[in-house]
Image (cartoon, rainbow, N blue to C red; front, side, top):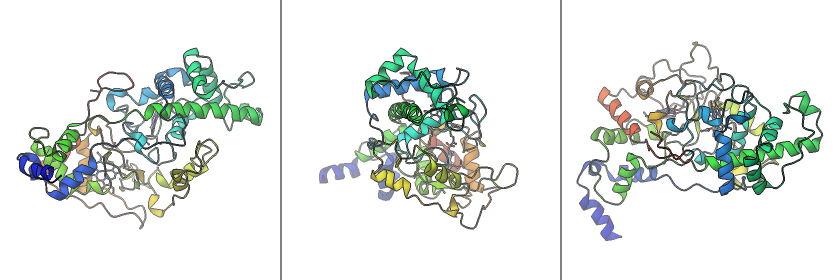
Length: 404
Ligand code: HEC
Ligand code: HEC
């Protein structure tokens, strides 16, 4: 150990050696991305057949009302699982920007406002959302049951598909079709629907970020090897600003550059009025009311510590307009940025942090972490160079193709 530590001190003679001991410790907490924790709420979370079935459901456009939209329509492989649009477009037009999915299984809350507390519960929303698939759980389960390739995998995992003969078209809560069904049929359809969500979640767990130049730099630094040429001098300067003076790490912390928590940046409302989007203030209530919550009957482990934690989450006045801190992995290919896609480029995001121009105070509880940075242009370029170094360019599990 002593020898290794010494080697670390003596061998690093390049850009990496400019980092202080404290900065090195922080870098070591930002990389590598750790292995995924188990998800006991989903009994097929790591089952190979569930991963296969989930990948098929993710890519096939068969579940949307017109048969043209799939998860991959909006979460495109070659854009870090985003769509390049300010706000998403499926069967209709949504109100929020499509988030990236690499590393998403590390999150605790899903959606910008955290209105789902598990990955499988999240996956159920797009099917019935008007702007996404605009379908119903009844139709989704019937569609899957009619496709032998999918049905056989489903039955390997979950046993026989329930009898769907009596299920009317368009059956989802709130419809006459749903009201006309027996409790047992509703439960059977919802159970199968949940199983589809759990299979998709199994697939999404495989979307781990690949190794980026920043990770190669961090590994070399940790192992006391030369970091020469891995990151440009501006990217190293950007990393130092990110960890230090610019305060980004206050929220964009850890290996996914997110604290997995909610903050309001006070982005100026587009029409100059109050923010149209309640953010976390609406999201927590929705997560609690969801039939698919972690401590509900569709979870495979409703009394887990994670389920208890989620159920005990506290609403706070600062949640007004707050959004979950996005991961910055692959951020250079996931624009436009922010929950409403208001910024086309990273430079525009950084300009906002630099000046906080137009920032609004929603109420006096809003956190005051952000101060205008007033950095010179070369420092903003350095921050951008660092953010660019988080791009992995990795082959993607979903397609086997190169992501860039
Ligand atoms: C019409 C485009 C569209 C389609 C289709 C779509 N999504 Fe999304 N997805 C979005 C948008 C927009 C959000 C953010 C919505 C919000 O926060 O309110 C999102 C959020 C997510 C999240 C949460 C990410 C996070 O960081 O919390 C996951 C996971 C996800 N989608 C997976 C899927 C899956 C699985 C499907 C298919 C079953 C799917 N999406 C279909 C646009 C889409
Ligand atoms: C107070 C917590 C906080 C701090 C400090 C912070 N961010 Fe953020 N960041 C967020 C939140 C929350 C969002 C999403 C806001 C929204 O959409 O309303 C965000 C969004 C972003 C985005 C857009 C990502 C995307 O996918 O849309 C980038 C890029 C970014 N931040 C970079 C930075 C950098 C660089 C710094 C330091 C200069 C920084 N952030 C400081 C919380 C923070």
